[in-house]
Image 1 (cartoon, rainbow, N blue to C red):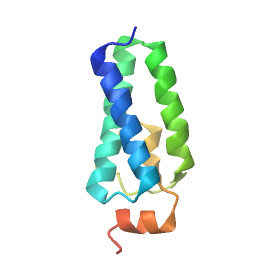
Image 2 (image 1 turned 45 degrees about the vertical axis):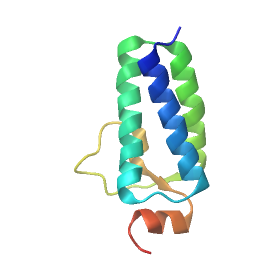
Image 3 (image 1 turned 180 degrees about the vertical axis):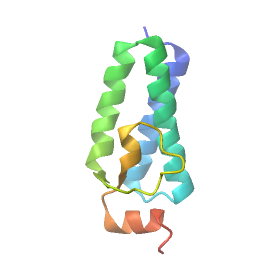
Image 4 (image 1 turned 180 degrees about the horizontal axis):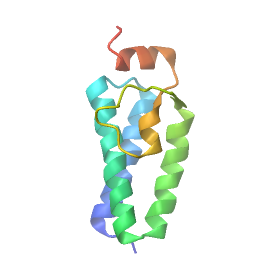
Length: 102
């Protein structure tokens, strides 16, 4: 059974990925989203909750669908070891919005 904190992080990750799918996020929002994924990764490592890990992987698949891998995503000063820090919005307009090019 997944504890409340772990489930809340999975749910929040899903909300953010849905937001990204629905409309562009600015730089602060995008970074907050990636930090939530960091928190989720840490929590999954601590709890070993395979059910929550499976749910997170489903959301990760959605995240990969709306992002592209970038060699230099610009997060070097805050980048964690998570693969998600190497991805930016796939949509050109969404990526421009994230980068502050309105």
